[in-house]
Image (cartoon, rainbow, N blue to C red):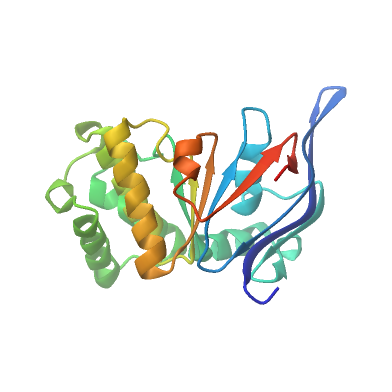
Length: 225
């Protein structure tokens, strides 16, 4: 569809574990439209992590199609896929995935290095993003000097540095207390409302998915509801 940014069509993912096969996804079909705030919710073992990898174009399906802005990603080389993924999608992880040996500012600029876009203007943008998420005073600090909530805000700034259309968050409040979790969810909501970012949450928590405008429930590798 014209308004679709990410679409999964009858996606299967089968992992071979020795002589046995594990069907993580079994014909998963879903569509994420531009500007939506969507939660993909399911219990442990439902296929959420694999769904995250598919939506984020981090892995290819065993069969089925994944369309990114209407283009079938299976026809892209790994280098092409990494480039388009880096520009189109910003990732926020439960475990923050920050580099422990470098500063907050350097962590935010990492995606720019991978895209070959690190320059004075982009470093200035990284500083502005850290100010925006309330961490202008923490630019020179390393991750182990930050609280969990602060680290997740750094991760959000990093996700925004390439101005992606989609923010894909995997259990973004999983390692946070209630207060910081609410802060992060409100921040994602503001990005959707004010900046028209497409937000996709992958979570098992109903209280987290309640922030979304649409909830896709999956079970046993398929859309349940």
